[in-house]
Length: 504
Image (cartoon, rainbow, N blue to C red; front, side, top):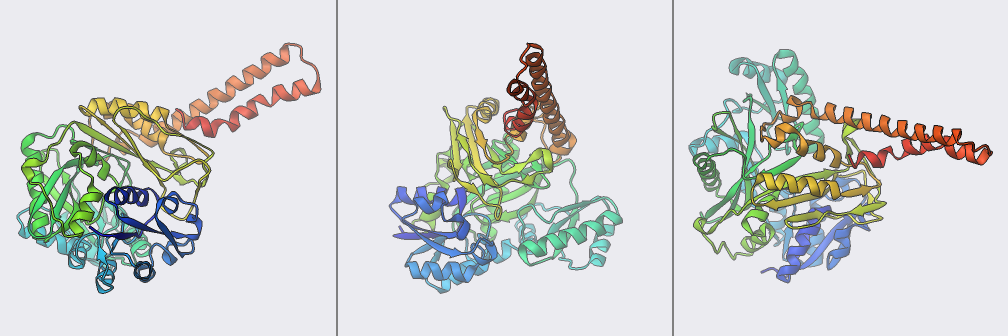
């Protein structure tokens, strides 16, 4: 096992990795930007090194600086976490050249997995179904338009070089395709520096199913079951669960076999996730490979009993996998809700500020992965993820009920969060029936309904405040101080709306 590891990331995933390293007796080196000097991962690591200013381009995305910091710190390995440069082949190659083990796939695998078009060609040869189209990368609208005409509308525009759900646009006609191409190209150029897109046939309705795999790089691949990831907003996952509702054992075995075959075809090493779309007839179509630790990995950990970060470290250290597929047991069900610093009622506007109050839920089967603490200043520069609430139970319905209870207990004051949205989704009739697909949010008008509910609750709160004020005024209080106090009640009620909206 490694003696020391540099964690090239921040926030909850850095904290998560540090804890497993401590379990294994591995020393940790954290990196931090100027605004993260008081972050929890900095406090928990054995050593912390400033990596640069707040702008991620000058800190967490700066590959040369990350690797040089690792060299200067004398570490054995580098763990990239997820996001930032976690799937960047150049980081893996630069680490290799510097004599530092990259905890993840080999550079060649990252190159292939990062090019969805090339990856789909390999997947086709492995005998796994792929969605029609997506064989050519387009940098101009004309080629994409021609491809859409050949496939027939509706189609989907997707980023050819990754993007984690970004750079995706649906098009039902030429006008939408041209507009979507311009927007998606601009988005991907800003986030990845590459603007190539491909066009594929749109499957509708569809569910997003992914399979967790573990591979030692020498041909041994273990699949750890599937996760349902269909609850999304603009192709960004909001919550995940396992097992996928309504999936029969035949379909479950089939998608697991597909995932293993893909990992073998890529000579995959370490852990990764193979993502699929599933149509209404339980036919699966390959989407992409996420060649890193997933945000939702705790869902799989809760039902398998495995520590996936520990698996990553052991494989990277050459210790291999000491179990077989028949040894993997899936026990019960689990679900994860992503708690983001965003305001769902205001178009998911980002929220930053100081955490004034924090109360975590608890009880049997409840887990919190977070880097929050009272007094922490949530910065505006990075991903909005604040915490992951993970719950386990005997089946999905018990998990759903337990998650509702946990969300009701969860309190964060100082920033707006998506907790009200998660509560609303979990209590929705269609969700409780497990009637899920990637258009769940639009089909059920979730955002609009939540906004209407919050608006109604706000009006009711103000009305109650006004009624109380009227009663006090009629009670005969006549001093100026008494009148001022009474008339201020509605205003106080309005000011409390921000806090109240996080409790509905």
